[in-house]
Amino acid sequence: MNLIFLGAPGSGKGTQAEQANAKYNIPAVSTGNMLREAVKNGTEAGLKAKSFMDAGGLVPDEVVIGILKDRIALDDAKKGFILDGFPRTVEQAEALERMGVNIDKVINIHVDDEKIIARMSGRRVCSDCGASYHIEYKPVKTEGKCDLCPGAVVLRDDDKPETVLTRLKTYHEKTAPLISFYESRGKLKTVVGQQEIADTTKLTFEAIDA
Ligand code: ADP
Ligand code: ZN
Image (cartoon, rainbow, N blue to C red; front, side):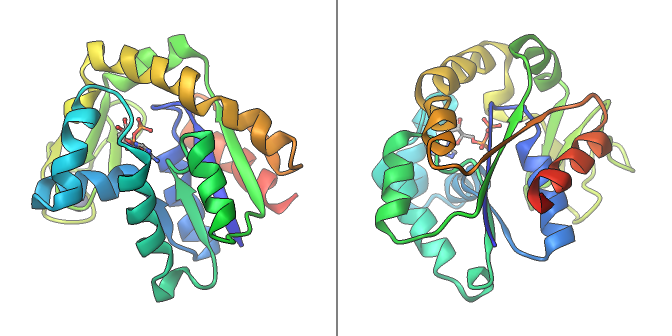
């Protein structure tokens, strides 16, 4: 089963992708996490990506598509995968089709812009393993420490309020057109993001199983 999780930054798609990974036992492939990892390790792709990410824009397609292609070629992705944060442009979606990847369903997690802006200031991420948290909705067990690894939990560089607005604009311009792209292919299921993570998870699983 190959799934795409679509949604604005802060819509909770990464969190739901982690939940779906646990339930369906297929890897959640987050291009955002992979890019942050590349930046941290100072790889060639990371060096190219950093300035775009910090500015709230998109990393050039050729960089992201290369990373994604290598990732889904790994053994654990043979039985299926959940794409979180890819495709983010119609060009990326077309590249995926050209690779011959068949997508079963696209889960579009909808959250209004005002709610997103309010949420993002509370978001935190593990600087080691990339696990995501929220000071209100998904707090860590020990202040400042990841639940899953010894890493520190931090505010992402691009979660600063001014960058959040740019990222939302980028989403509406570049990524939202994918909603009609996948609708026209009969693959789209929209889930309305709820206040409680578990409620969204329930709706997400229903959409996947439907
Ligand atoms: P969010 O969806 O919460 O904004 P992500 O972790 O998915 O965050 O992505 C963080 C940043 O990484 C994006 O703002 C963008 O700069 C870059 N990025 C991630 N995925 C892609 C992609 N598929 N294409 C281009 N840039 C990407
Ligand atoms: Zn961690």
